[in-house]
Amino acid sequence: MTKIIEVEHLVKRFGDLVAVDDISLDVEEAEIFGFLGPNGAGKTTTINILCTLMKPTSGIARLNGFDVVRQQTEVRQSLGLVFQDQALDVRLTALQNLNFHAFVYNVPGSLRKKRMEEVLRMVELWDRRKDEVRNYSGGMRRRLEIARGLLHYPKVLFLDEPTLGLDPQTRYRIWEYIIKLRKQENITVFLTTHYMDEATVADRIAIIDYGKIIALDTPDALKSMVGGDIVTLKSANTEAAVAEIRDKYNIEAQHDGHEVNFEIQNGEEFIPTLVNNFRSGLQSISVRRPTLDDVFMKLTGREIREEAGGFEVMKKQWSMRQTRGGGGRFR
Amino acid sequence: MNNLRGIYIIWYRDLLRFWRDKARLITTFVMPFLFLVVFGTGIASSMMRGTGDSGFDYIQFMYPGIIGMVVLFTSMMTGVSLVWDREFGFLKEVLIAPISRTAVAIGKALGGATIATIQGLIMLVFIPFAHVSPSIGGIITLIAVMFVVALSLTSMGILIASRIKTIEAFGMVAPLMLFPLFFLSPAMFPTQYLPAWLGITVKFNPVSYGIDAMRQAVLGSQQSAMFGIHLFGFRMPIILDVVVVILFGLIMGTLAIRSFRVQE
Image (cartoon, rainbow over all chains, first blue to last red; front, side, top):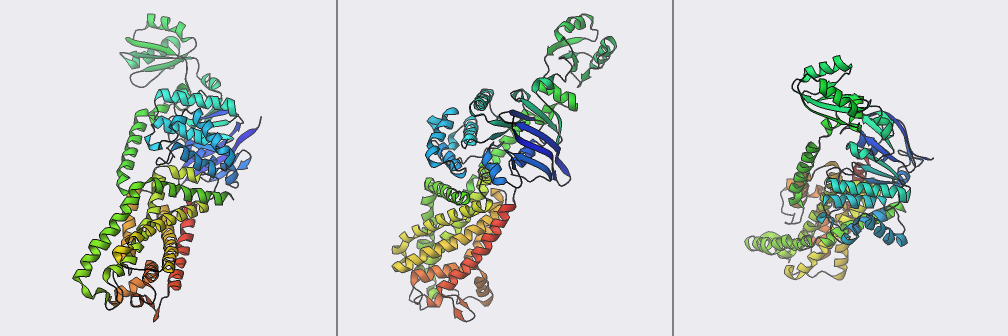
């Protein structure tokens, strides 16, 4: 196996803030590597360093064997990047956007047309190739960006929150493309997300929090860090319920004021016993397999979504769009 | 090689956008038309002395100044387009590409300068309105001067745009730069009657020399002698005017490239 990304003791400071705090990791060729953490954890900063958009404060990072500080041009030629925020020229057509990219990345003239058709067909935008991108929906734009990122056959494709703000159907299709790609092109995919369900697509996941990697393993191994299934219940008296579970079963349950959570092996078999003997006014109960959310909770004591909040992100994007629209009169 | 290709494609994209934006082509005509035909006629009819005994009427005098105005304002649009690219994200695609920042800045400056020159060329359709009759040589000189002026000013636009991050801020700063450059130049009035303090300010404005060169190209150097800029008792010939503009452009270009390179 070839190491396509090597990171050693990477640090990035902004004044007093340590955005990336001594990160080390390796990514193998053709691996899908997930970078998971709440907003502001240092995911995008790390990607920016790996993509030469920022210089690290200290530490070494190599991509495709090239140093990201000293061999910027070679690194850039080796990677494709789909940004968190859109980076298309919306006044041009899809073909014109791709043509710009092909030119900048030195795709030979004889291959340019063939490649553009190939990537556009893959993301099912070939029929719309001559439309101005401003007439595209959010999902179509993201697909076009993925197509563009692949146009020069990069060794590594970086996807920074590739499905942020997209509807579930579009998200699902984008993941289909990414998995298909890895099979077809032997491409390495490095992705960041705060959607836990998405991260399970990855071969390995690094969980990052406050700039540090707090866990790095396969999704299954990470999930097995949580001791069994997750039982969630609601009771008339939360405090009493926690005390009762502790006294009867010697399990330390956690609660957030209205829900009680605890872990147990073979949750389905445990529930009947619990329900039959419960005295603290049981209102509802459920059991489920552990998710990466639970892993994050287990490792940090916090829920990843507290900071990630889908609604808050949507609101932010919406207000950003408003300001952009407001600038239109200066055109 | 990489960088030459980069310069070319960035230049090409700006022209492509310009070409697709038909509204911008049409609006190009409106402002100069208002200035030449309405403003020019108004001024000419109310202030007879304006151009003295030069043999030119006010509209003839003003016409090269209007060309200068178009080049000046269009050049600044390059800065707007850069801020625009940043706000809409496309700048990232450019900055992550395997071409140097210097090539990006040069491509952008050349693109903006080409567009400004084209816009200036379009102004030649007003020749019949202005009752001027430049020679072929004069028009060729004019085109060269327009391009040099435009390149200097787009460099300045890029310098400002590399410091200013939002369209709103640029929209406020740009007029603060543009209007002094425009009004403190011989574009709209002959400078020989100006009070001393104003006359000196005009001489410190690099745009003055660009407009003086354009006027000499359109009206003829001898014929427009009395409107010329005098430095140390000598009247600036067209070639020295151009040298001043080039020097200004080199300073702006260097600062722009340096400023553009450091941003993350």
